[in-house]
Length: 373
Image (tube, rainbow, N blue to C red; front, side, top):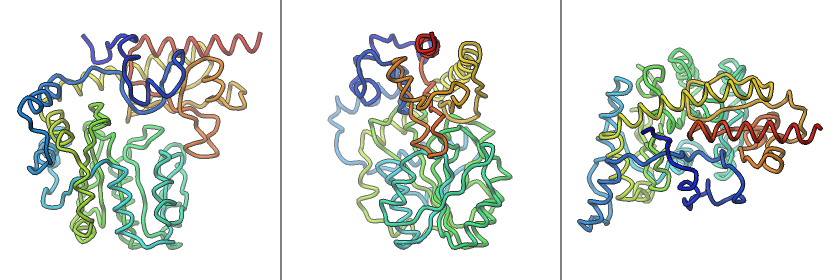
C-alpha cells in the first residue's frame, strides 16, 4: 500500500476545490491538495475527539509543542515556544504580520514567479509591490539589496519557493538576513512546504542572527490538512513586539480540530511523510521522463514542494494552460497567475498516483497530435 493508492473513482467523491471546481471529465492537477490517504493516527484522533464530544475551543499548546518536536527531528532545530502564536492559516498569519511590520503605502518585496496570494496580501493591505524576480530559479541578492536600499521595508519570502520548488540554501538565507538587517527590513517568511524537506532545508529562525523575522508555518501541505485549518507564527526576538501586538482574533481563528489533527500528524505520522516524500520524488522523475519523451519538454525535478513548474514555450501554444484544459482535459495552474512573464509555464501538482501522472501526459500528447494533424 502506498500513500497515493486512492482509486480515481474514490477521489471523484471528494467535494473540495480540486475535485469539484472543473468539469467531471477534467483531470485536476492544479490546486495544492494531495490525492493521498489520510494518515491513520489523524483519523483516529479526530474520531476520538468526536466520541468524547471534544469539539470546543483550543486551549492547550499541543500544536506548538508538536511542531517543536517535529522541527528537532526533521531539521535539528527547536523553535522558541515563548515567541510563538497560532493563526487560522499561513496566508492570514502573513497578512496580519505585514500590517504590524509596515504602514500603508510602504514598498514590500516579492520574488516572482510567486504564489498569487503574496500579491493579494500586499495590495489588499494598501502596501506597494516591488518585484525582485528570481534569477535562474534563485534569489537575486543584488536585486534585493537595491530594493531594500531604495526604501522597501518588508520582504515576503517563500521558503521553499512556490511555484518552482527552489529550496534556498543556508548561505543564501544568511546573506538575505544580513541585507535585511542592514537596511532595517522585516522578513515575513512562508514555510508551509518545509516539512516535505529534510536536512537540505534551513528554517529561517535556525540562523544564528536572523534579524527581524516572522515565520508562518503549518502541517497543512505536508499532511493534506488544508480543510482543517491551523497555522503557527514564529518570531525572532527582534520581532517579538510585532508578534505581541497581533489582535486576539488572529490566534483564535485556529480550530480545535485543526490543532488536534496537525499536532497528531507531526508527532505520529512521520513514516507517512517519509513515504509520501519518496513517492513525490518518483513522480517528479516519472513526469520529467514522460514530458521529455512525449512532448519534447525539459523538466528538472526540484528539491522542494510536490509541484512541477513546467516551461511549455517549445510547444508554440498561445496559452498552454488553457489549451491543456480545453483540449487535453487536464487542469493545471496557469503560469501567468504567478508572473505575467511566465505565461508559457504551467504549475503541475504531482502529489498523486503515477497512473494519474502518466494519464495526464498522455492526454497532453494526444491533444497536441490532434490539433497538429
